Amino acid sequence: MPSSRPRLARALLLFSVFACAACGLAYELALVTLGSYLVGNTVMQTSLVLSVMVFAMGVGSLAAKPLQRRAVGAFALVEGLLALIGGLSVLVLYAMFAWLQVYTPAMIVIAFIVGVLIGAEIPLLMTLLQRIRRQEAGSAVADMFAVDYIGALVGGLCFPLLLLPVFGQLKGALVVGAVNAVFGIAVVVWIFRRQVRPVVRTGLLAVMVLVLGILGTAYVLADRIEVTARQQLYRDPIVHAVRTDYQEIVVTEALAFTGDRDMRLFLNGDLQFSSIDEYRYHEALVHPAMTGPRARVLILGGGDALAVREVLKYDDVESVTLVDLDPEVTELARSWEPLRSLNEDALADPRVEVVNADAFNWARTAPGPYDVVIADFPDPEDAPTAKLYSVEFYTVVDQILAEDGSLAVQGGSPFFAPRSYWSIDATLSEAGFTTTPYQVDVPSFGNWGFLLARSPDAADGAASAAVHTAAATGAATGAATGAPARGDGSAPAPLRLAPDAPQLRFIDDAVLEAATVFPVDRRRSDVRPSTLMDPVVVQYARTEWQHGG
View 1 (tube, rainbow, N blue to C red):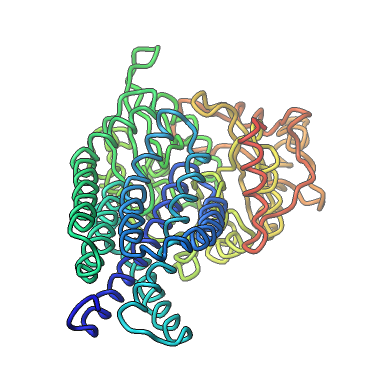
View 2 (view 1 turned 180 degrees about the vertical axis):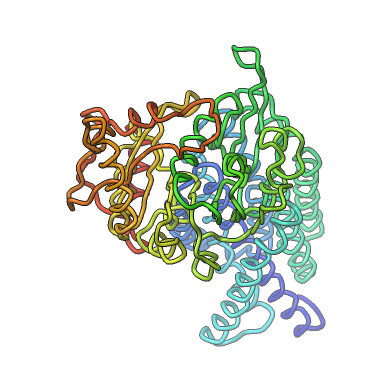
């Protein structure tokens, strides 16, 4: 008998099962989240981690069979190893990613080891539970798995609601490891203390203390390790870094070859702008859409407020609504002096309203109509961003766009990712828009593409006016712009600056005219539009960027 109170012992053991199950699921979620942050491709990272770990759990269950005769010591050692490896997993993988660039193979190895150890828990715990009080196999399994599944539920909820917000990824995994060590070793050893020789009991408790010591040391050093590893990922010195509920925000700064300050914003490692040439990107994105009505402007994404800066150059703009998911980004643009200086304190303008929300869901109930909508989202490299490049999303945008309004979309690089670029064009067409594709050179990005879209009626009217203007100078619209002919026969929206456009540093009408001409090897290709249920743009973008186009 492990204790003079079998009922209490059994309750404590089941609570240990609960705690270990919560820790096990937290390890799985930590690996999935880390891979999504560092590598992207959330679906692939989730599939890899879960499939490897589930397979490894089966291996661990079989491997535990010969250990059942010494179940107390074996379980304590398994939990000690699980606490150590699981707790350090995020820290080790982050270091492997930063210094050795071998993240995926290392992740598979760690996921397999953690899975084997998790799989070994249930057979050993079942043996220990039967030692306290014999039960029929069905009842014992029911009790065990009921508690195990409840623990997994709690662990799954605690990870996003407690561990990540309070401790962050690195420290959160270390805290889980410490909890795992205590409940996996101390509780079990205490329950079965009469069945374990004193020297073995002392040894197992010493293992727990050693594991806690290693995890505690790593916890103290975690911030320093994270800063050092993060800097390894960036060429220039980091001047600001924060991990939010949605992404990692990093700002670097260095002197460019021109002697000017080069400030760069990265989201999850992807460059968003360089202060040296961001004006090229934002002028090309914003000003072609400002040729018609522009009293009410909606900017989706673009939380750095650089697109807002360009919109506010027009005095007749009455209101600008900026919708960005991450409040940390817009707060950075509002209050951090280097970025506030770059965006010319755009968010302090009384005409600007900032909304922190998911753009897709917000747009479904948005108080339209808007004269101009500017979609400045990250490239569609995963499912969360792909929905913002879907037929469904553009259909929603069309519903809040004024009849004679304009939609400007950043479309990635027509050179490095031509299929994803033209897929966005096809997606806009499928949603009912007439588009004018165009591309410019932004040195930090290389060749970069945009699309100006209008509803067919508005586009036909604008194109007709452009034809009359072009006819006066002896040129047809298509020849003047170099725009590719559309398969549906509709005229492309004209690409020009408004007569009252401000003086710009990069674009003028001549630059825009040239921008609509694509080289032969990068003209419109036979690609499919992207939808919520079939986000082909993700596959196009991922394949092209991985293989350099």
